[in-house]
Image (cartoon, rainbow, N blue to C red; front, side, top):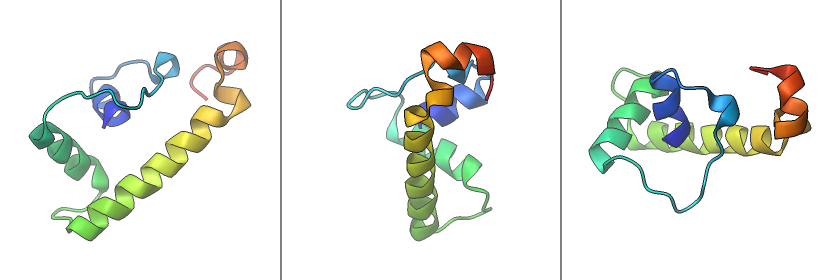
Length: 79
């Protein structure tokens, strides 16, 4: 949710790092955001679950990537 809400507000995600345990927004806002980006008009709970698991996996891998690190990332802006 933290990445998607910032993306929706057109914030620079290159400078954002997810902090576990940080709570932002309400449950209603989170669900609305997930439903908006899920890609389905009326997603089931299973579809939302699969979407969030896939997105979390992709974001974790991206955060671990050397190309997205603060040092190397400056050379690959927006990568």
